[in-house]
Image (cartoon, rainbow, N blue to C red; front, side, top):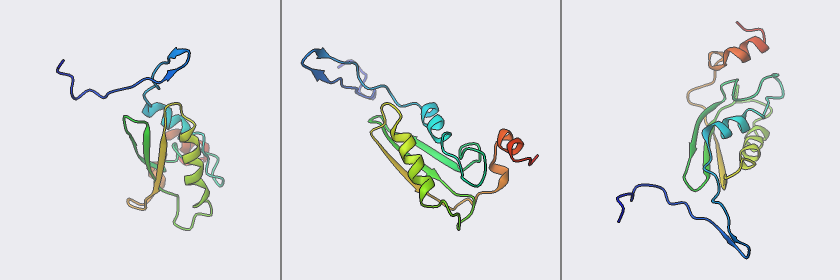
Length: 124
């Protein structure tokens, strides 16, 4: 035993042509970039800069769990935004599954917006 029992084990796949490289480890930056491709249809700012993404958890096997909120409980995009986030994250290389949970605590406020988002909507 080499003493690396706690290290995640990554297996490569075999093809008739030989061994291929293991899938890349999913980075938080890649998941954030995917989330940033989703825009609230009523606000010209992506949902990450709006502060709608509360948590990102990435497992070693490529499963991703995201907690997000909406700007208001009655948001007309309540059904489509989580689906758009899921689709964007599933397109990240190495992601094997994505669960998006909409949470309401803590409630979203404009203070959660990045400085870039505030500039885009003239709220500074």
